[in-house]
Each structure stands twice: as C-alpha cells, then as structure tokens.
Length: 304
Image 1 (tube, rainbow, N blue to C red):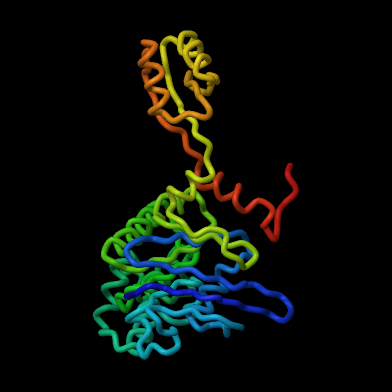
Image 2 (image 1 turned 90 degrees about the vertical axis):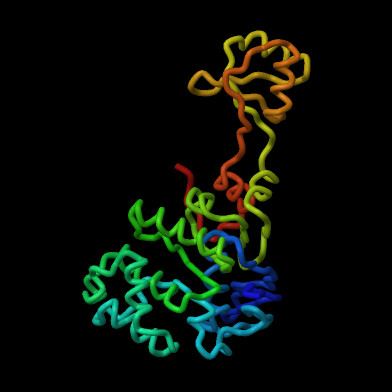
C-alpha cells in the first residue's frame, strides 16, 4: 500500500529541534493538505522523507520502505520541493531526459509530461529563460515523470497563473481519485480548501491536527445560520421565544448565532414566517487554521 508513514520523527539542528516526535499517516485516495506557520517543520519533514536530510530519530517511510532504499525512486515517488532545482543551462527536455534515463523511464514519457504540464512548446528552451510559473510546471513534470503512486508537492501553485492553478488543482484531485497518495504543503488557505480532503497541521515541529477537512473546520466553528426573510420582525419575536437573537448582516441578510439552518427553518415554519433564503454559515479554513495556530507562529508582524 502506497501510504506515507511518519513515526516519532525528530530532527535537531544543533540545539534547535525543528521536528519533534511527529507521528502521522498520509493515505492514498485523497489529497492531504500539509499546513503550518513558517518554521513549523513542513519542508524539513518532506526532506527527511526523501532522504535529503538525516533524521535524528524516528522513521519516515513509504509503504514501509525508506526512500533511499528504492532502486528507481521516480517510479514510486514524485516530488516538487524547489522549482529552481533544474540547471539553468539545460533545456527542459534534457533535464527530464536525464531523470528518465537514471530511473529506467522511456524517453517518450518526457514528451508526454511536457505536454501534460503545458510546456511542450518551450521544451527545447533553456531553463534559465523560464518564468517562475514555467519552472513550476517543469518541476511538476519531473514529479509526474515516473507515473508515481506517491506525490509530494511544496507550494505547487506558486507562480502559476489562474489557468495553471485550476489545472494543478484538478490534477491533484484526479490523481487521488485514481488511488495516489498526494501530500501538498501550502500557505494559501483558500486554495488548500479547494482541493484538500484531509489536513495535517504542524506548529513548532509538533503535530496540532490530523483530521478530515470538514471535521477540522466544524470543530472550530460555532453554529450560525444565514437567512433572508420578508418579515424580520415576526422572525425576531419567534426566535426570542426560543432564546436566539436576529442580527443584521450585509446585503439585506440576517444571521442567527448558536443554531443550525435546519433548526432555524423549523422555528420559522412553526410560526408561519416566510424564509426567502437559508443556509449554514461555516468558518473558513483560514479562520479555523488561525484559531488553532494562534500563538504558535515563529514570525508575526505587528498589527497595523
């Protein structure tokens, strides 16, 4: 099974502990968002998993095997950690071809991933002429080269235009639907909310959360319903009898704290109050994340 397994993973740089006894799994069939403030240990954890840094203690394996023990790793694991990794003097095609040859991947696969990532027309241009977004697409092409079952992406939307952001979002979800294990580190909460099914949240090298996206947000949200009605006074009286208050919101809407839409609808029906619009108002991922990580940020600016 192509799951990522992190067990008591610890990494010290001198006297500084950047990863502190982490334990979690990343499962196939879903996109897992990897979140945390700057310095939380996300990139270090990915580097330890790929054998790019030596761990202090614990274990980081893929299907029970360390990355450094894989004979042809690109067939099992694809990774984008640094879009600047490709040598600027090489063409994109030559960069991918070198990776393919070293991992026993047919040369025709190079042209396939160049096409898939939208840079086939510039595949014979030197990488130093590429924009950040083009380098990002090249890095993603390298990660996809071996058609791996595990994909690690660090800030994959960085530098991409809106079309590229939609493309990578749909790609990640498609790969997960096909059974791949997809771990994506990002600081963009709204973007993460659009593709992630599950969340792993770190702060100061420690695990803060490991839960499905909906559960993560709901556990940090108070019930609130949003509505529109032609008879707010009658609804206010009805809600007051039930112990709730009606609060004015923007665009002619109203909100009620402490109640779900289903229950509010029942109150309105009992009192014959017409509702023109009714929905639950949930906290955003950004709000839930900030609530969880408050006080954990290594760097924070002074409020204006």
